[in-house]
Image 1 (cartoon, rainbow, N blue to C red):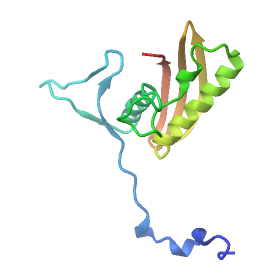
Image 2: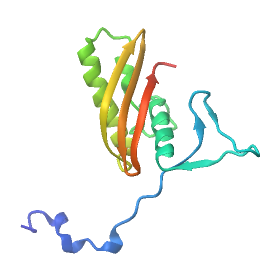
Image 3: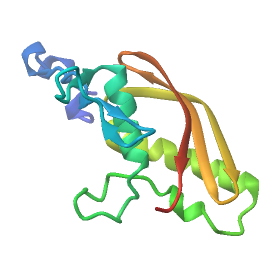
Image 4: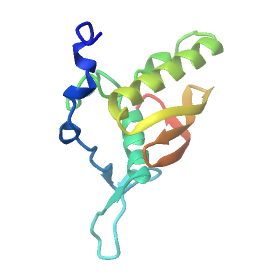
Length: 150
């Protein structure tokens, strides 16, 4: 059997070959004012774990895929393609969920193990998504993240 599946032989993987994931870190960011948070002396500071994942998710959904040359083509979302089109609500919901899952898997798949309770709200040209992410650090609720053209 190992001859058919040469990469699945458990004897070929040594414990020292397995690399640990780095702890998720980001500079603390206030998403409502779009500014870095500062400590008492005016310096920006980093957060780790789920707060960092939440900031990474916010940045991911503020970046349209294929639009910004500073990002690789695998980074960002494609949700803006749903805005302004005459699609049915069912189609928008299913495609928005698929685009959300794909974007997170491409960018943060090592940190996020699963998504649940995905809710899509499309009102007056603004697409808003909410979901619960199961991360390697625990559960993270992401309420009402707006997606729109800037």
